[in-house]
Amino acid sequence: MIWTLRIECVTGRYLEHEWVRLVEVDSASSLDDLHDLIQDAARFDRDHLFEFFVGRNCRQRAVVFNESEDDFEESNGCDATLEEVFPLPKNMKLFYHFDFGDDWRFEIRKMRNKPKEPEARVRYPRVIEAKGPKLRQY
Image (cartoon, rainbow, N blue to C red; front, top):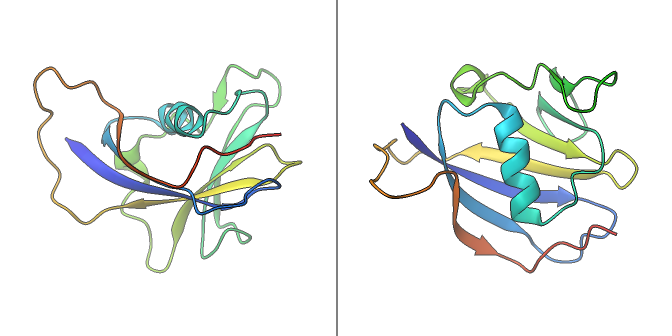
């Protein structure tokens, strides 16, 4: 099924403007796939470690999914699918944290609209709405 996610950048060293992207993604996608989607949408260089975590806000963590520090290419928990992560416990949110020095944090919300069947000849994931200019990574 295709879900709509709202991805908002909530912190980052060079964050100057509101940055929100609505995306359509296959519900069977992994957190690693979501990492790639966010990197493409933000036009970042994929040159830093990252993690996903669940918490009440972007500074508090209850559950962490991160990539392995031993091998930048292999994941350690980021192979969990969106279907495994959602629904989240009450009052919890999913966050993506990239580049721990520049502290880029994105809040990811599953929209309440009804999941839909994939459309023929449409390539997923895809950005369906964008608010705010391109982020400046450095």
